[in-house]
Length: 145
Image (tube, rainbow, N blue to C red):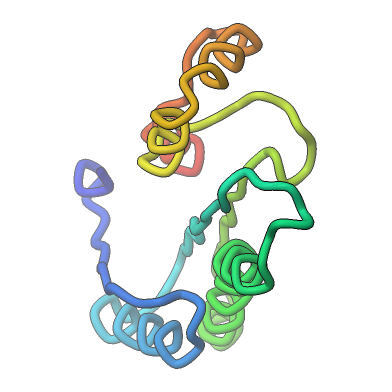
């Protein structure tokens, strides 16, 4: 998507919950691009809808590591580089449900998979959304740009 703006990007597969891999990601980006001007941190998972008493510590750790720790690690290593250069922009995205229970889903694979298993929830949610559809991921990207 960014190619239409003549913006060079780099993709590195890594586990964002592991600091050594995040550091390697930043080093690869700097090596390939020269410096980091803008970073967009967008990672998230959800757990199965279960009662709190039935949830496991492993599930809690996994969700926290991906949804919180990964953003923290990325910002830590992005800021190191940006502070040296004296400039930079970081955009972090998260689910609206982290702040309040308002409808506003984005049509991602994770959301699609959930609603495939719970079509009744999707129908109820669509009735609560004024535009009667989910946001497209490109709409989020356009807002960030």
